[in-house]
Image (cartoon, rainbow over all chains, first blue to last red; front, side, top):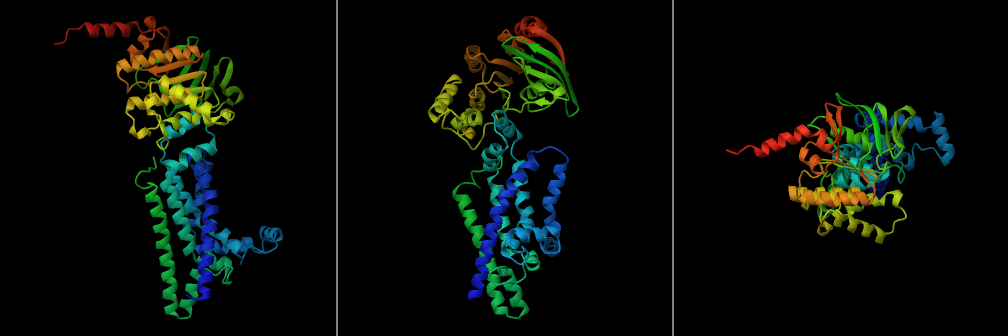
Length: 229
Length: 241
């Protein structure tokens, strides 16, 4: 693997790790709100959170490129705040990845939280649990499999994303050139030997991540002994 | 003293009842579907009425006219349902301690919490179950633990929805005696929903007779359940062929 490939490999891992961490921080409370909340507006929240799943990645990338670029007041405001525009930067990629992978984190958690027996939720509320404690001490432990699914899907989805990355980040080595972009460049240059290598790395990374996570879950009994209520 | 005036819907079921419980042990008696569980959920604050007021010792827990509705856990009210609903990922001791970890008990140290848990498990005869997981309990044991968990935070009002249905008669009677003694000592008012007339008659309680979401009678068990008592006695005296 060339130095350039290693750089792209490290960047992809960093992007996926940061994106997954941010997604969990957003998706857990959002999924809890969708499951525990009341009101018709929650349907709109869930629809918005699911929208990136059905939107073509290039369309989403284009929207974000325009929104975060100098053509909008929002984009100019962000650039003034950070000292640089979000488009064509690693930070911009993180924003795009978080939005693009949001449904892959939220949907498993909504399904997991919704499967927790409402009698347990009622019991916790009767014993004085507020929303944060209810989520952290009841919903998350009882929906461990869904949490694991959210982590795996978010991470691997981010590692493999292409459309949003290309639209929003372009192809800047060390900043926005991920493995998917490297693979695209190699194919475009008819360098199939290198493309084979890069594709194998992406495949290996996916298998490795799944194997690590599922082996942890087996050791901890998440899959065997655990339950989603 | 518990007093309430409620107008509530649960699906298509309509509950409309106005009452005052002066006794420290009141039984809500009625057939399945009469509205007993709905009433207890409203009293516990899990559901809201369309209109109405619930007050405990003069303090409004729910009052729709002025937009008051204290959430469950802030009403000094505990509810034990027929389904024990123990947290399956926690041990029995951790289940009982759950209500002692709320902000209200922030000042309670670990030793005091452990002591309280032991006291509650002892009360319900489940001391030897402390380290077990709910999956490893029988139905009756789970109901005992659920009762201990509900009592641990020291409620002023205890709501019991057929809580001893999985216990055999002798165990249920023994637990009932200990529970009533403890409730009297700690000045806790209890409201028990049941469709079993013997439960109501055995405790010589004040009885609210509920039918199709309406109060049909309120008074001493011997008076309100006289016909039920006669029916039960009749069955006992009928020679078995």
